[in-house]
Image 1 (spheres, rainbow, N blue to C red):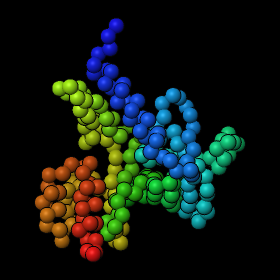
Image 2: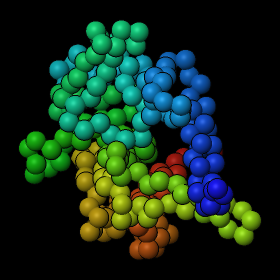
Image 3: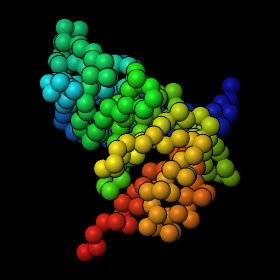
Image 4: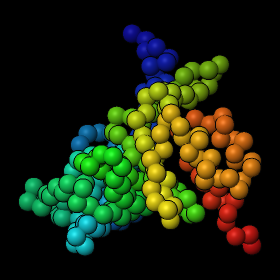
Length: 222
């Protein structure tokens, strides 16, 4: 039985993608938990510093992932004795988490007393940008055969993603709403006319690009 070209291309790309992700973490502070034959960085756990709201600091392994923990954060103090050293802490009691090259901070959504996000920092500078991403929302790369080659498309981010962006300045933290994010962003980049023009046509997923460009615009020139 012949395997359809599209299915074969998808399988080859998926295995290649997973292998690439597995090789992208050479850092000795991370360990791999083997759950199946496919290796991705979702199976890596890295030494982290969990700083609690009370000032207590917990040093333990947390999962390496582009997704944001929801409700509670799971950790292990000893990967050789996971069952005996497993711990879980509610997000509302956490101040921030530093793990490998990722920095997460607890962000409280105004108007919702019990709505806390542990959001990952994606931009740092005059404007600090954080993103909260649910596990089910990251777009999946899909290979499509195209005239002898394999082109890559993604499930439309703006329709399938439930990520939430937050901007932080000295004045405080603001949740960027999908219905009004262009207007909200414009208030922060009034001194950059070119970016004001670009904002008119961007999508929600393009927010990091605008924030990064603005931080570079304000960066000191050599």
